[in-house]
Length: 223
Image 1 (tube, rainbow, N blue to C red):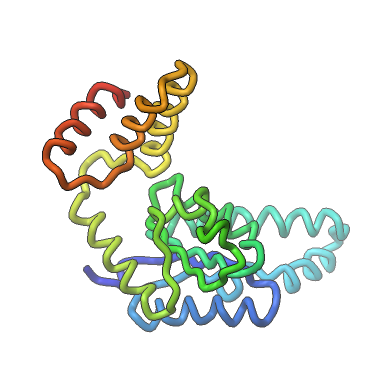
Image 2 (spheres, helix red, strand yellow):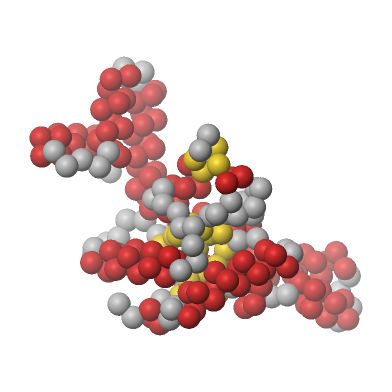
């Protein structure tokens, strides 16, 4: 695998010097390892520069701000879609709202995600929010140096499993969620629901359970 063939979008808070410094550190370790990156604070549109220019061209402040917002949104969406992966910096008392949207877009379109988190304030009873952690298969990274290693592993796995038709993460989870919803609607027993969850999510090594899981999924997860 050649790292220079891959681009990673860096998503996270960037509205004060400390936040920008941390995002620079994330981008820097990825670039030094050979990956291409898109870091909005360096590579994107700067509202502070564009807004006065629009007003200088006679555009009222409110409309100029609207143009800037639409342009930033469009550029960032394009860069997410034009990247192979995304690193989400979750640090902060509350994870950055824009970064959450960016990560959701990336995940829904089958991009490779890694979560960077060293801030314990985001924990809920010892764990991060499952709706966020699920984006990276419930894995997170706590040191800058581990980020290239994690992306190496994730990209290599995708390359090995590549096929003409690749189901997105969104499609997979949507099907799983639909099956769970159907079980709840049909008022299945707790035991039946437990069997379903094991079949959908458990990592099993026992051959008998593995066979049972395969038969269960074939019967209940048809498109």
